[in-house]
Amino acid sequence: MKKRFLFLIFSFLLGAGLFVWIAQSVGWNAIKEVFLIINIQQVLILFSLSLLVPLIEGLRWKEILRVEDKKISFKDSFELGVSSFSVNFLAPILFGSAEFLRGYFLKKKKNYSGLEITSSIIIDRIIGWTVDAAFVILGVFLFFYNDRVTPHGLLIKIGWFFLFFIICLSFFYFRALKNISIVKIFRKIFNSEIEDKSLEIEKGVFGFFRLSKKKIIKPFIYSFIKDLIMCWRTWLLVSFLGGTISIVSALSVMAFTYLAIIIPVPATLGSHEAVQIFAFNSLNMTSSTAIAFTMIDRGVSFLVASLGLFFLFSIGGDFLRKYFIERGDN
Image (cartoon, rainbow, N blue to C red; front, side, top):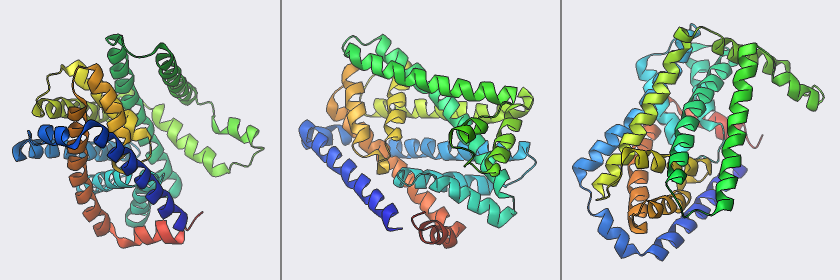
């Protein structure tokens, strides 16, 4: 328990320090001038779009469960979606905590087996990562295609990173569709130290992706819609701040937002500012606009996360006790 909170506090302080340093470099007055352009009606629009994201993610998981002959209500999928968003947004350093929340709910309320729960969560994550990766790769490619400033060495490193990710996803889908175990590879590497449960979970995951396209297409569509909403939300926020960008440029800005999320800092403090200053400057917008963008984006996301915390406590304080205390530092 102590290690979890120490990691959380350390990551928050690191991100907060980076944020303050960047903001001071740009100038608080310049940020304030841009920040004050936005009004309450525009914030409500952004909040509504932001709330749609975890709602759609909840519906995606609900559909995956339905395909596997398991049911949860729309209300439960929405509350779990917003609660999971809250955990991931406020405490990303606590890897797997949002997944543990969903698993705890199904185990307690529906009495589904741990293997069934785990496989559905992995399927949900893989589908989300696949569609998100497609948007990020396209956004970053279009950004650098029109950019003539970025150092050649950085482009090569980014290219290798995306190539590695594409190879990993392609490897998974190839093995899943051919029903060739991936777990057995790791069992050979680690001398069979991986439990047989992993093979059962893998079987459930592979079984889903080998179903007919008609059965599994909906979760992919939900992910696609979610990313379209995120792109539209990005374009609106930049426009509200007085910026003028195309939908293509908004896609690139959204892609950099997703890249910032990879760094496990609470509320993407500091990391979001760093990547967006780079992106906004390359798109001929000011650093102060970039920081105002990240601050408003973070503020609206925090409103959604606050609603998620309410749902989290309504789902049950038992989850917090089980995750943070009973699991201890294991």
